[in-house]
Image (cartoon, rainbow, N blue to C red; front, top):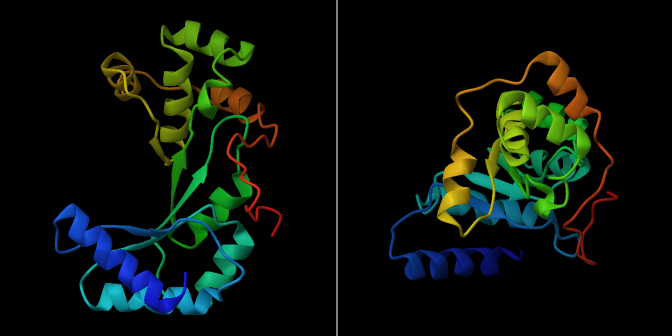
Length: 193
């Protein structure tokens, strides 16, 4: 997260990908050891030099975002764990107010939520899978989802969410599943800030 480290990491990534620029470059985890101002200054240099087109962050809470936004460097995306058991409504609203898109990783709760009775019932109602219901819920909230799958069948299933809609009752029920459960919570995380 130090200034020079950010520049060198980006240069290495560009070399490995054999490309001249990246459309989006993310700060993967907040790091309180290095001042966010230093990291954002490096990100801005990469942007100004044309090596990146957009700056994003990942795993940033509202407080982390507030600190980063004080630098006046534009952040376009915040990639966070987001699924029905971790409905981060306040973070979503803050990001919307500040023009920051939410990108949901682990949108299926690493598979841990797919047998939830509410999701199963809603899936049956729409003749879809519970995974498709979760992804449609995110889509209807304007959230980009990046589910992980190595199965071609699952990849096709994950994209097949545009031929149905969840009604207000469905959405409200899914919203109500929030349990503030994180399936990705490494020891170094700083989610309490």
